Length: 360
Image 1: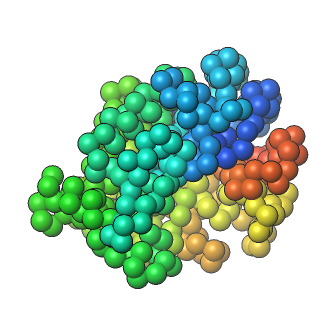
Image 2: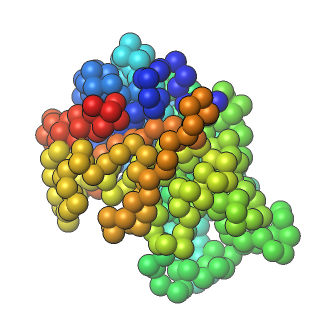
């Protein structure tokens, strides 16, 4: 099952842009114009990151009350969908769960995750709660109903502690409700990560029922080689953006475990609107410009270390588990620049990215 079999490029099918329309409002006019430009450049896919900790960027059916005041309405969505259809750009909606979820949980505070010290984590959904999965499935259905296509993104990033966080954050029973839920379902050997995997697999199953390919950020996917109690289904396409440490899984671990992947290299392909590190034009990072440093099969080897892993091509005629790559624009400081300036900056990244992806 492919992400968008209707588009063929002669090379990789997935030439994508991920746009953070949750943190920052982009007008329907702006996105329609962007879609036209993406088509000119040879992109095939626009991934819409619709929900974030502080904002929901679209009025989801049955969840209108949690949308931002300036969120897209049904008319805005219809114009974006029509433009994408005309341009041959596949849309991939993302509801980011179970982390980055504070705005989704307004009015549902009882679903917020609580740690072993009694501290509430307002940006995390407690997937052990009986209401959590039905709520997430309704959100997934709502997003899929607004944005037709062949894929949906399940989110799944930054739910558990990152490797540099302290020992308490890394504690295996940091979130007792997740551990208890996993052990009720699976037995005494289960962990909090198994609760997460059960939740993701249920969302992925619903996506497949809707005729959509499920996608997931790679953060908490345990490769089959590590024999997880609950493997995340290999029907899920992994959006591989990060590898924090040498002992955390690499793209090779995922490929060896039978996953298909998209390359969203978090060092080379992340344009981040941030006051701490203002973005530079032309994909310019410490290691050089995007077009001089990136290759379609070059994945992150180690975060912030300029260490990369190149995946060799598959033999002619063999199915390629590397579906393509995606450029990302994240709006951590949404007021850093206006929409027009942001899209102009994005174009200086999108053009060289597209050239590299097309082999030009």
